Image 1 (cartoon, rainbow, N blue to C red):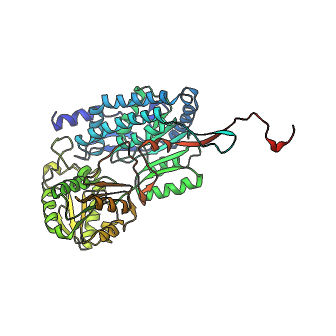
Image 2: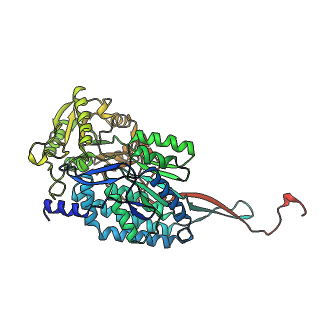
Length: 503
């Protein structure tokens, strides 16, 4: 199908604007939300977001659905069947989901198809985890049989970002449902449609009504209400660090557990012995795929001095060759940013860096031409001449902007890489595996890639340290994060407790 044909198909398939509240489809009662296609500024859909009344109703229905014996008393392998059915539904609708998400976010169809496949895999994986997660008999220290069990928390709020909605939604919904909870999903206002399509799929898959509600709306109103509501047992949030900090304060007042996957300013480190072609391709993918709109983007590049000039020259040439284009064109590598306001914010970061003395090696402006005039496009940008303490090297840009810095030895690059409030991810390129291991263990990061970047497995925990967040998602432990642990003691003697004396 041509890009124009894909665009027309996606527009026809968009959700109709009703919200999924407590198992029912109806118009929201909150403020209007406009969803735009960032490739050309056209309107996808205008919908009414959720109101406080909608949120209260969704939470009440979620409580009832979660406590209903029809859900509460399901054995783990029976809950798993619901997750498998959702995974099947995502796979059957993968092309439709991809087109909707591309309209919703501006991402390429190549990427959104991969994200749909990832979401299906996430539901399937956590179904398998639910089936195979064992309770534990703990070591006896007395006359009682002792056991550790995990039980659902109740109603969980999942607050997800606009950059990869279907994958982010799945990473929260799947383990929360597998653990036996109900979920209130609040997608970002810039990308509300993908989550509504996921709700349609969960309903068709037979998930009991009330266990999932989707409430697009502002973070200030709906997000804060979910965090503060007494009947919300946990909040899982992916988004900006400042919002995450404010959320953590509110959660602390409730003594409520949270999972926070926040921002990053991830270092990419290229040693002189690296395979240069492999390193360049990895660096390009790490910062410019998803148009840089990724919390794990490798936005600080450290190159060993012995190869710095040659490496940067080749990197700049490869960057200039990247194909900027329409999200529905299969040749496109760099699509538009999510919104014109976000492009303006990215451009402001670059302008300040230039004022700080940065040298523009490529990019630093929107592409020229009629094909790009109405879209939120921005050219992949490489800046040199900045110190690691410059604002551009410390603040998350969330766009296709890379700072390149030289280094001379292992100790220096570890110190510079770690000299940052964030600790989400990092990449290392070297043929010396012992060095890669040393550096990888020394870096302050929740994920370290060696001779690759942005590779993921749902079976491997993911999260950050410092300003990058609290807790981990994915992996078998990702399900336990949505449970409360309980200890059980069962007397084996049948004798009265001696403390009471004769009774």
